[in-house]
Length: 170
Image 1 (cartoon, rainbow, N blue to C red):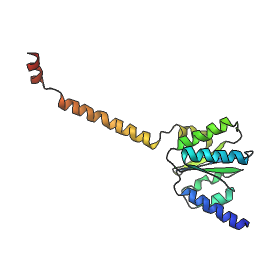
Image 2 (cartoon, helix red, strand yellow):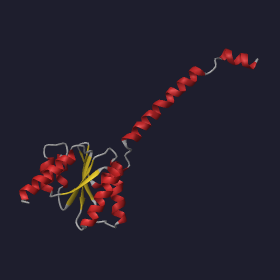
Image 3 (cartoon, rainbow, N blue to C red):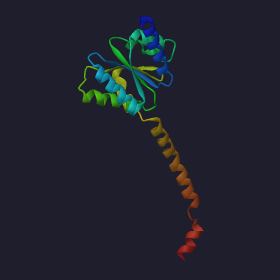
């Protein structure tokens, strides 16, 4: 396969991965074996609907150019594999990678910068994203906060009136 054809294939895969993507981050994959990459790919796909793509930074940037992910450009240095999180449960994807990293003792293979909601995050900002509740959790909290005032109103309307209390006591 020619290098041009391979480059077009990678750019096409990158564009496909961007279609339903909610979060992109790079991983320094220097020193990871093919077996480890395949294992990580399988774990991420199985648990978090995340795609892992190993590609040259320039090819990935060409695919990101002109999209909301373009702010990732400063992070395109060194040997990167790219994580495309295609579900809204971003903390789960990050935790899955971090647990894989700890299990395999891959401390040199850290996460690089990331883009979430068109904002570039540095690796030290990941704690904010890791602790972020999922969309389902946020909806649950909102419904819970709406539930209690409504329940109080129903209880107030159903409470016996003062005249009813007097007849029960007498």
